[in-house]
Image (cartoon, rainbow, N blue to C red):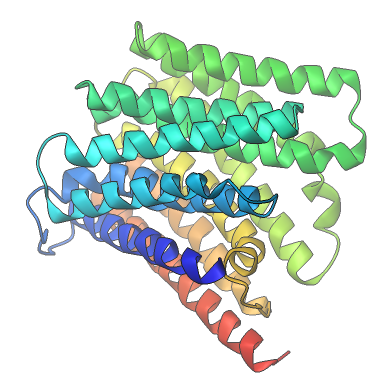
Amino acid sequence: MRRINLPFLLLAILALLAGLWAGLVRLPWPLPPLRPTLPMAHGPLMVGGFLGTLIGLERAVGLSALGHGRRWTYAAPALAGLGGLLLLAGVPGWPGPLAITLGSAVLLAAMLSIVRFQPLLHTWVMALGSLAWLIGNVLWLAGRSIPEVVLWWAGFLVLTIVGERLELSRMLRLSRARVGAFLAAVALFLAGLALTVFAYSMGVRVASLGMAALAAWLLAFDMARRTVRKSGLTRFIAASLLAGYFWLGVAGLLGLRFGGETAGLHYDAFLHSIFVGFVFSMILAHAPIILPAVTGLPLVFHRAFYVPLALLQASLALRIIGDLLALVTVRRWGGLLNEVAILLFLAMLLLAVRNGRKGET
């Protein structure tokens, strides 16, 4: 089964590389667009082609481990990866969006299967995240613009991540008041998403308030506050998580201030605080655990992992400052260094896997 997983990982990495290239073209850096449609496919490639494939694969691996009869869940990463390929190839119209939408539908079905086996709060929250992705994709397929649906895509990632963190926080035996505060923040975020369909500006602001509340909850109650005092990989994961929670809070504040905008520098700062600051910090945190689980390849952690983590945070701060102060050169370099940090981390993961296979320490 782990050999079967490798093609899906390659599809995800291909979508990531194409999305990063498109991002550089959009900044803009003087690079060839490869395809005329590639720059506009930056967001769908990163969310649907890369993260959709990756999360779909993770869920498929988890469900397949429970027993036979669940290999259908691999249709989620297959369809999301196919959609990414169609976008990369520049196929016009509905084929790419349709493939990604179908992939999100399969992922939702997989999450509901998990809920059936584990009807717990955290699995319901992650299922709501998959539902948010499906709704956003349906709206996109129906002709809504990317700015009108991108917050639904963000909802997919935010709810999936906070659901996973809630699962781990159960070891802390959260009080009813703390669980109630978490539910209130999730409800506020979901209400904002729903409002964007009818009253975009108000919806973004309500959802942003929900994100700020979730960030505050995670910073206050997530177990990363304790594990950051440990050492090795555990400390690196905690540092990445805490950095991500900070950026989720920044995104919430930016959304409250600039929530009605659908283009421009403020819009760029809002989205990249979520997708680069929060989501990619979470990827850095979880990749050293998920990659061995998906591939079966051992991985050796090294303190050098902190280099791309630090570079990601510093370069994003540079980009956000450039956005807020209209310093075009500053934001361009910040965006470029964002991508350098991501690629450096990817290279270090491959090196860590190689060292693991050699049995190095």
